[in-house]
Length: 469
Image 1: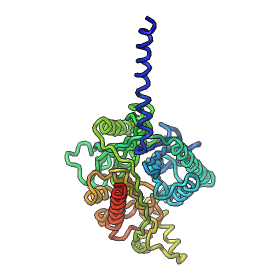
Image 2: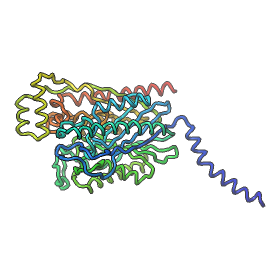
Image 3: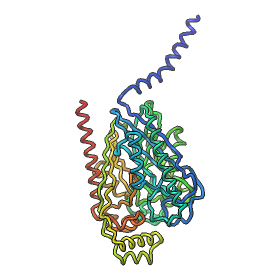
Image 4: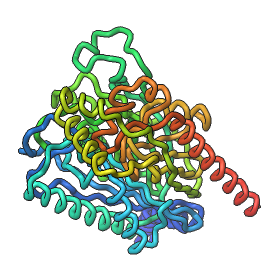
């Protein structure tokens, strides 16, 4: 009788051990990805000047939710690593980007081509280093010290959170997919107010694709979600810290999937605004809309990616137009907004001193990644939507695109936008401290570099596959 009682217990113990045994078999398989993820708060430790808008006249006075830096570390079957860092900030300037990458190389052995520094471009975060320096009024000594202290604080947090992600690498699956959300509106072609919702035929191109990478453990339980959308984070203009709609989207996704780390990256949305805007309820609405789109992608069949990483990073020269004429500077001083007057005065001082104006911006970053079957093109600056269409035409509709990464030195106009002029094509250069717009040919040069990089990645991948066979 006692033996009969022991048999069910023995069978129960075997059944309980099966899932663990199955997981051990999976994790011992060398063909799996490894992934690690970590996050840290980067909300300023004191109220300071906010980034992105020229019209602000005082520092922040509150917080809607925290700002974050998050790191996703990936390792392929051959031990190659890449780290994607997302942040709720306006953007990295070159100085800060170089400093962060140098430290990541020194501390963790990461090569520059294997680091992505992404910013959500929220306009409800703090001033970061020298990014958009001429859009703000001159800072006094206390305000400047706040900017410098916050830069060090953010930099240190990024280095630390990257180390935590690398230290948590464990076997994982990665899958990609796309969805859509429709709140991005081309701001060059449509009104900036609530009248846009009554317009039956909005003009100008927009990219409504929601790009998603899902990182799961070997048993397909989600660990992290990396997602992107091409639209300015400018729903809000209040004086409180927040990630704007990307921040609310990340919060909502983490509510939907407890324990998951949600990471947002900005696509090519420099000429796109969420419309209508300027209400907290709208920022929350767009965040929920984006989160639902991500959730649908996760719920549908996704493309599982093979554990292989290939990367290219190259900085190219972008030609600039000649310096402004004195008559233009005088007109800006007489008629321009405060930020335009600051630019004109600076240019006049440089001209008077005989300073030689640069003919190029020589550090424009173009980065490409092949994560298994998924291609990602990463561009610096505020990239307009035309680049998404040009690159997908050349490389296929399954291409993922990321802007506002590695170095946000200016807007990046397409040839069309450059010819049309306006803020994205011309005057936006002034708030970044440049003497004038880019020269014609910029779009072809950037697209050609990205396409060549992707072709190189795919050739390298094909060669590696033949060697394994």
